[in-house]
Length: 132
Image 1 (spheres, rainbow, N blue to C red):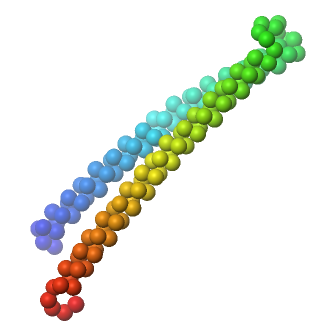
Image 2: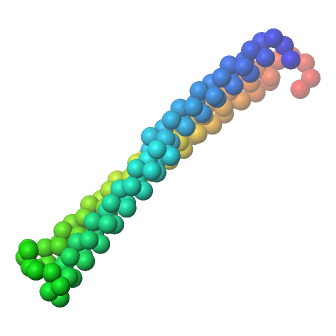
Image 3: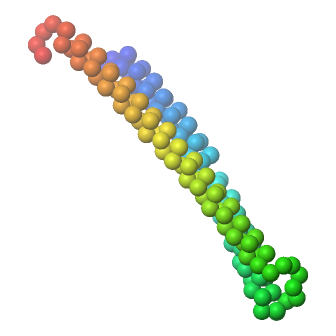
């Protein structure tokens, strides 16, 4: 290998490493380890709230506790919380799909770039005198 080839390979390796670090950072922002703990905590809080509201409404219905609020309000609030959770899940899925699209688009761009480079090399080899 010549000195120029070695330098080119070093530059490509450095470019690969920077792209890899960018992708890791993006994955962390979209749904990486930091978000897993937060999502788990929010899910536990959400489940506790919904179960508490259902339990309070059932206890009020069977008159185990005095009527403190209108009937069915706990069920309506629980249903509202479930609706918020569904909206949140749709939002998270849209973010993931956007990221996947970005990755696939980036791969396609790189493939097209490599294809152009190969075509340029092929043309240069055909124009070169000597045996092919």
